[in-house]
Amino acid sequence: MVGETVTLAGWVTRARDLRKIMFIVLRDSSGDIQVTVKKDGSNDFADLDLGREDVLKVTGKVVESKVAQAGVEFIPDSIEVMNRAQQPLPFDLFGPVKAELDTRLNYRFMDFRRPRTNAIFRVQNVLLTSFRGFLSDRGYLEFQPPCVIASASEGGADLFRLPYFEKEAFLAQSPQLYKQMCAISFEKVYTITPIWRAEKFNTPTHLNEVRQMDIEQAFADDETVMKVLEEILVYMLIEVKEKCPGELELLGREITVPELPLRRITYTEAVEMLQGAGEEMAWGDDFSKPQERRLTDLVGDEAFFMKDWPSVQKAFYAMPYPENPEVVHAFDLLYSGVEISSGTMRVHIPELLRQQLRKKGLNPDNFTHYIESFSYGAPPHAGWSIGLERLTMTVTGMNNIRECCMFPRDRDRLVP
Ligand code: ATP
Ligand code: MG
Image (cartoon, rainbow, N blue to C red; front, side, top):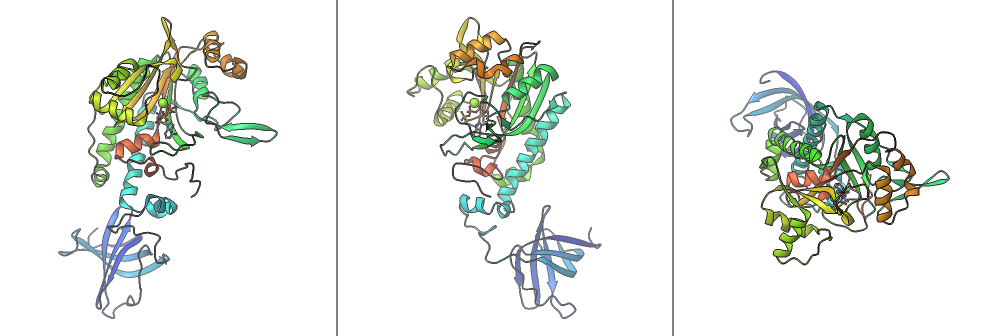
């Protein structure tokens, strides 16, 4: 490229105007270049009066430079100001003072230009493409579930309601019923889909709109899909390490790819470990987020499975152990101290499903369509769901999930 005439377009990171010469740091998605403008009367660049984030198109030559940081600089023949940025900017993109998360989220389009934010979403992009690549290479079919649904999939709570013509409808809390319907005929399916949870609390690990990355698989039990889950996690981590070394360095995150198989501890063992460490909890309780972190310290592995959960803690569709129906074929995957995924082997026998619904205080009559889908040759099946933002959060080492969602929706935030 050195010596050739080229055209570049991008944003002004900064411009330093000296009397005879002006240095512009011009930035595009591939990085920065120094544009050196000589104001010797041979051009009309004298009164450009550039501000940060002005958008420029420059045509000229790249030349070697002893002084410019990259070893090259750009000498323009023409400079076109494509658009001006209003000054002052809402926050300083490259300065030493960090803007508040709220301010950055209010101006998210600009925040995307910050190197750290940009790096988070480049990592997220690799997570998404590697997830799709891994599964489509192994014969999984991508499906699209509906997001507006007629009844609750997880049993009532935390649902957003909306008017739907003469009826009432809900925003899906999970693609659960649809992925099961697909798996019992297509065998191996996956989806990346938004879901909504009307949880009222505001925490660093919860959003009200989440992107879930799910698989569902026929002729499979919980152990079959746990294997897929640990393999895809490792694959995604390797891909991020390979494709985003610069981003990881910028974020100060070093990824250690876990060795397989991951450790599997039972729910009961986990409770005993925490009790032994002085935590007040009883068999049957769920783990708080601090307890999940504590447990990770006690287990000593960055990633591990917790399996064989009490039936009371999991949805009605989780398959109970026949010899001990208080325990179900369910698992969580903890990574970096946070639950990033949950899965179960599902109940595929209509009568058992009715029984499980009644046990949860739900009326099987409200689930007729769902139950009916298992009446015409449904193989045993299992699946899981990874939260995209949770995964991105743990992989990039962020401590607030809002950093890892382009346009987060929480109790207080509905714009932009
Ligand atoms: P938690 O116990 O952490 O609130 P959950 O067990 O209710 O989550 P699941 O129904 O198991 O969530 O959903 C599967 C995955 O989706 C979770 O492991 C998590 O990664 C992600 N997820 C679920 N709810 C949320 C949420 N409100 N915000 C962000 N991610 C979520
Ligand atoms: Mg869960």
